[in-house]
Length: 628
Image 1 (cartoon, rainbow, N blue to C red):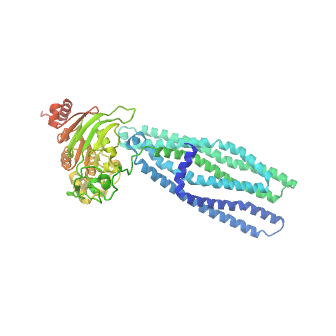
Image 2: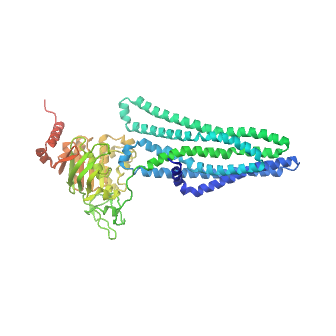
Image 3: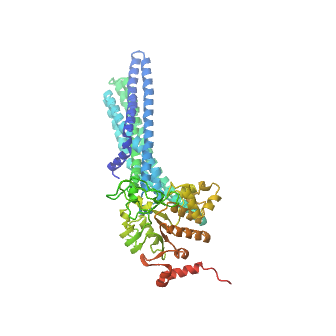
């Protein structure tokens, strides 16, 4: 990343705090000024000693300068530290907000562990470069200039000796800085690799144990950790060299000044007080030079962090708060039937109908405001028009011109061989992916024209693996509709047969379900996911193999629940079980990315050979064993 762009990004982070940083810089400069006054006071003290004058006043002045400088610099340091923490907080909030809105394909192309590393470790590195490095560079440079001016006014010959020595050593130090930058960036990338490996391991923890792969996974983490250690040591080595060069330059300068200055005192060209003051100034140079070296070193490390953060911020995100031209401004909020979507967003879809009551007891009139039309609450329609799709340009097409129309309400099942593109249909409806060609319409309107929040607020979605988040059971059930009433929650628990589970759990709905729902069975996790979707009272319900892990009793109960939901909303299911398919009002048979046939179970058994084979295989798989 070019230095100009890096500084532009850094300024964007510190801009809200620029006045506080400026105040801290002023305090630092005042502290530096008190330090510069100390050698002059020391010279005056030595001169008074030579003239047999009282030194009490000068001692008091020196003491005041030391105390005042310490207090002011401490206040400036506190302001910088506090501002640095604020910069990190703002950077993390901004980055997390962006990462959570990434497009699904971007997340699938990126390692989650590396993204987490950018939020945690990379933003931490902004602390120094965004405040201490900037202020250190400014104050260090000003203090260095002031010190050199005073030294030049006091003894120009000795100043030339000092600058000559420091220039030689400073040039060598400058060659080290690019190495620090390269090693720091490599170390940060290695830390991201550690996070990626650990995220993978904990995501498949039981599989690792069942496979006896703990040692192999540890070896992978060890390799990543050793890589981070190696690059970190390299960066530390070059930083140590840069730091030690400062002390070395001062020490060599001291010896040179002492030799040349002693000769000048002996020749009468200067006096002892001037030589002592000059030597004090020389040691005082350590502070501004150290600040400059530290600032440049921190910049090298911070620039690598800024580059990684900027890379994450350039990842494509979904639109937020978009509204089609001409859509009315929001004037009222929806009820639980549309998950609190803004009225103007939901109103954009045609087909207004009765709204659900908060407790799920029955319909109520849709809220309106001003001249806005009634909000759509009727079950949604779904249409695919010659839809083609592939996940990436270098991958084959998943859909090859998919066409179908699903009317409002009822249950539609999608069946077909693995890889036929069934789950992809749901991803295109939710706009997790954009169709490569053709159109996907909900309520007769292309999903690209829908405000994204309004579209998803109308949809309930249960994924294949039915994810359950860490937290309590209540947290998970209310995740998609946090303002649902207790009455609605109890009703959904009964419909999904989770009420018995809640009664059995030690803390009921407040029971912590563990990482990814580890304290629940597979079937319980599926029922929680279904209950979460039903509680939202969506206009369109997408169930992707939602009953695959249920036992026969609970599957029958959920079949009734799905059938009941299909009377109130449009339900789409991806199913392999014949028991689910036979309930459908219509079945869409997909094969190799195309719609092969659409019809009822009886029609397709008679008319479509592929569906007949799938149905026959399911009948054989689910048939009871013959009596021996």
